[in-house]
Image 1 (tube, helix red, strand yellow):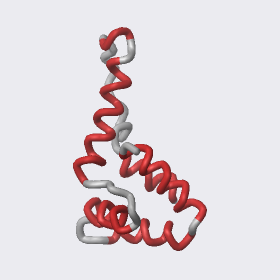
Image 2 (cartoon, helix red, strand yellow):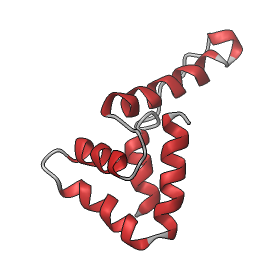
Image 3 (cartoon, rainbow, N blue to C red):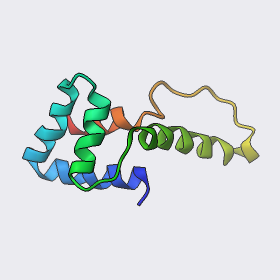
Image 4 (cartoon, rainbow, N blue to C red):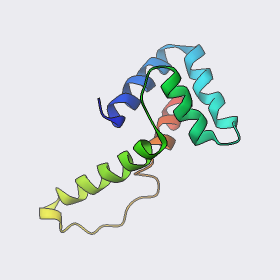
Amino acid sequence: MNTLELLDTLQKEALRNEALRAELLATRQAKDPFSAFCAKCRELGYEIYEMDLILAGEEFVAAMKRSTNGGGENSPMLLGEDDFYEMFFDALR
């Protein structure tokens, strides 16, 4: 599975399991929340690393833009549309 598929699977599991949801939300209180989240993912068996998570959003948006009119699409990126980390937590709240 790619990073987006891993996040989707984990998110669905967290929405069904309140204890898991609480564990994931607790990572937001860590000194380095992004790294704490990725470490928790790996602890749970989801191989998600910091750079994988960052690149997944950027690559997803780039692929979308390339697929529009042969890559000539030049609309501005919406704030946060490439931030899968924040979108993950938005769905959990």
